[in-house]
Image (cartoon, chains in turn orange, brown):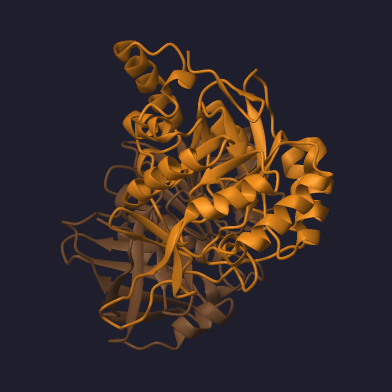
Length: 303
Length: 265
C-alpha cells in the first residue's frame, strides 16, 4: 500500500533519510534502512576532503535546530567505499548520494565517479552555510543552477535530483530553471535562513560560524508552501523535506504535491524509530481515508 | 529543555595532576540530574568538546568536569580562573549501570579515571569495589585519594613503577581477576588499553561496561559524526557506555576512529 516510486526508482514507502543526518558512513545508513526508510540520502560530499567548521556546529532553538557543520566530508575517493558498503537488501530500497561543489566541473567529476554505485544523485545547490561559491550561492542563481544541472545531466546515467533553497524570492523560478536544465526531480527544501542564536550571558553567537541553516518542525509550513507552489509550476516529481515529525506531516507534504518525503532533524526528538512509526501510522490513515496508494494522495491539496 | 549551552561561572578549580584539572559548577538538579558515565559538551566560546562528568554532588547541587591538557582547546580552558564563564550542554549519553551486592572491578587509565571514579562514588554504597587506578607515573595518578576515601580498594599501576604495580592497567587487572571472582567491570581509558582489557574480561566471562570516545559535533544524535562501524550507533546517544555484547558488534573498537572529515584514522 505504501509503495511508490521516484524518478523510476522503486520505493517500498515514501520515506527517505534527509541529507546531512546520520549519513557520514555506511553503518549508520544501513541502520536507517533497517529502521524502515525506503531510501537514504548520504551526507553531502565533494571532490576533496573537508573538515567543515569548528564546533559549536549545532544548537537547538524553538522548533528545531540551526547548524553550520560546513559540508564536512572525506572526499569522493574515501566516501565511495562507504557508498559501496550500503546494503540494499530489500526490493524498494534505494541509495541516493548528495553531492556538492563550486563549479559544473566539480559536480560532473563526482557524478562520474559514483554513479555506478548509487540509484540517484541529489545535487546540494542549496546549503545556506556553505563556503563562498558553494551551496545556496548556486541555488539562488537560476543561471548557475541551470549550468550545473545541464552539465551533470550530460554525463549522468542515474536520475538527478536538485535540492533547492527556500531562501529566494521566487522558488518556482529556480525550480523551472532546474527542470529546463533536465533535472529528473526536485527536493524541497534545504534548511532555512541562515539563522543565529546569541548567548545572553556573554554576548557570544553560539555557532562558531555565527550563523547556520534552520531545520525542524518550525520550517514545515514554509516547506509545504514551496512544494505546493512548485507542484503547479513544474512537471517533474518532488521530494518534500522540512520538519516532518509524524504521519500527518507526511500526508500534508503528499497533498501539497510531493511524491516522497525526507526526514532529518526529527530523529533528534524521535530517534531512528520514527521511520517505522510513520509507516504504520500512514498506512492506518490511508485505510481510514480510503486511499489505495500514495499516488492518489499526491497533489490532493490542490483544490 | 533546549539543547543550548548553559553558561556558568567556574565555582572552583582543583589541580589534580600536572596535566589534569577538575572544574566545578553549580548545577540545577531539578532540571536534569546527571549520572556517572554521562558527558557534557564544554564550550569555551571558541570551540566545543565532549568532556566526562567526574563528580555529581546532589546535596550541594554541583558537578565536576575533569579535563586533561592535550591540545589548544584544553590549554585555553586550563588558563581560566574561578569566576570565569564556560558553557555546558547536556548531560548526554547513557550512564553506567549501578549494580547491587556485586563484586566489581573498576579499571581506569589516565584521565579515563574521571567517569569511572564518578561511577565508584555511586557503586561503593551497595557493592564491593576494587579499582585499578593507572597512569604513566605517580604524579599523573588521578583520584587515588578520593577513591580510597570513598571506600573502594585501590590498586595503583604506573608505566614506570613509581607507584604500585609497574606496568599496564590491563596486566594489573589480570592479576586481580586470578585472585578473586568479579561479577561486573567498568572500564575507561585510551582505546589501546580498553581493547586488551575487553579481551581479558571476555576470556574470564566478566560482563563489563566501557566508556568510548569519538570526535563529536552535534552530540544530539543527528550529525552522524560519531557513528561507529558496523552498527552505526551514535556514541553520543547509544553510547558512550557500551557492554561487552555491544562491543562485539562495534568492529572499529580498538582499530580506528573517524576524523572531522569522516576519514578513518
